[in-house]
Length: 82
Image (cartoon, rainbow, N blue to C red; front, side):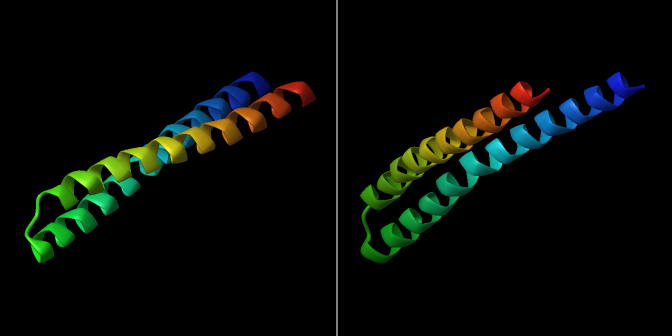
């Protein structure tokens, strides 16, 4: 019985981790792209859109790295206590 509850908890934690990681990647890319497109429309240059996309990708990679680093630390400490 406890094994089933633990398995469900592990699946739920994994699902939350994947969803959070997706949000951590998509939001910076979309926000920076929108800001870059707004600047491009205002100043009349396509370079702002490309720059916004690139800044968004870098921010997304940084956010994903930090999130996974923290998640793995919590996961490892949880494994040591079990």
